[in-house]
Image (cartoon, rainbow, N blue to C red):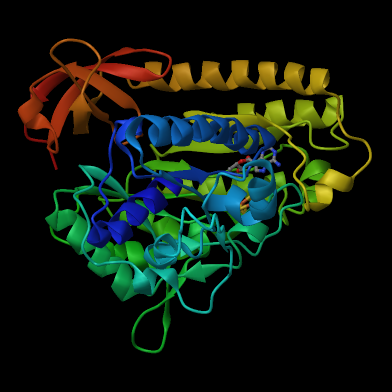
Length: 438
Ligand code: 5AD
Ligand code: SF4
């Protein structure tokens, strides 16, 4: 979502004459768009801010210009005052729900008075209503935020505090944005939300649409070939969404559905409101609806109180599901979240051991999934040139990166490839037809 938000910041600043640059020393303003989900991501902001201080001094000395430094995103939201205290050279602190106000905030920066502008409101107005309709082309595969915030309050998670309460964009504004993206050359959309399948957007005629219904409407947008969504909560996988996986060819056979732990005791401590059985029954329904669906997930190891037995239940859940890919993290205590105050924190060395063995298993599953697709003929949306000479790179329906010998003209097109060899994190392919099969 930070990628989407950063693109929208570019859009909102474009009328003021700002455009993105790859040359740091030519920038008039630098915006760090930050993530607070784990301590590591959060601490990175402060080391990056050290570099920004040097930049500011260098440009003032060498070019006689003032560079504006802004910090956006969830670290800004959660630690705005701390940022100003530790990095007084920061000019603007702006949270994830107020970046539509950037033009106004930028206009208030006055290098002489060294005033600091902090805007971390949760405003009444909806930022999407104030973001420009126009935007730069986003490429063949683009993100589209449809939902934000979260009311679930998992005990480890900062999101409900940094992104705020659940909000769903009205269906019409989503459809309009989708049509504009497609007109700009996008053919795959990933619908975004912290809790995307809790989507319940105004349908314009007094009712609400679920995510499944929204996807059905998006499937009618001409030129939109592929639809994905992320991230989902198991309890919000309703029948309309599950049957969308059966009925809508544009909806890709891949789903990121985090469970976090395979132990019912830990799930309860995490305040997840579901058991492993509920999760597994959702996956059963999904596989009935779409037999080749590739599953992905998130796991946290070393949540407070996690015993060896709890952890081994995570490994057996992973074995039951068979993931095509997954993300796993050591538990990171986050300020202000209930789990940070639980005694029984797990030691760093135990967390490291558990992460290592979980990742070994997940990597083996990913390779097995890839191996199993060898020889298959699939559509690939070509996104860019590959790392090696003559290579093109795109994604299979299952989100696998596919590299094949091709032509830069193919960027943005869906081509048919036979998957020829599995790698750990990608597939090699052979192009069969430069027009994808339906
Ligand atoms: N520590 C470790 N991992 C976390 N996540 C969220 N909060 C924490 C935390 N405090 C992970 C979860 C979530 C993903 C986005 O980040 O697995 O699904
Ligand atoms: Fe965080 Fe996801 Fe739980 Fe919401 S559902 S609190 S975003 S982990």
